[in-house]
Length: 159
Image (cartoon, rainbow, N blue to C red):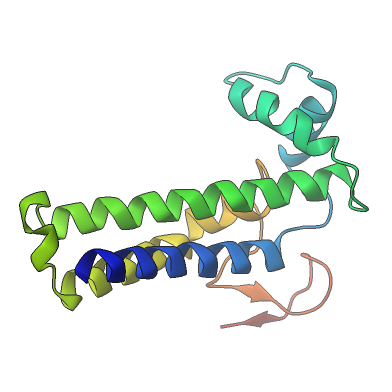
């Protein structure tokens, strides 16, 4: 029962993170490195050091998917999917730390809930949030300062 509950909570954490990242992903490129990373993934180009060869290679087929979105938006959605997978791995790691493997069958609700809340706290931290919404962007929307309006340069903020 505990293993089934932990799997359900882990899946729920990943789905919540993916849904939020998917819904708030930028539809186009943003400032700084986002345009360079998106162009490199779309053309299999080379970017400045230190580069990101793995993401360029993974992003090339993503940017060429025949959907109605721009390649930059598809890459931003892909970054959100990768971030959601990372949140799932953080959940598994936290669960492993809170409950040793030999006690997996006796796992209570507290370690499962703690791992889930910890993974969600990580999901919506500024660093992961910034990297999951705009591929390579250092200045994207963060949960501590979600901007009102349609442009990132809007001066109004919701706290």
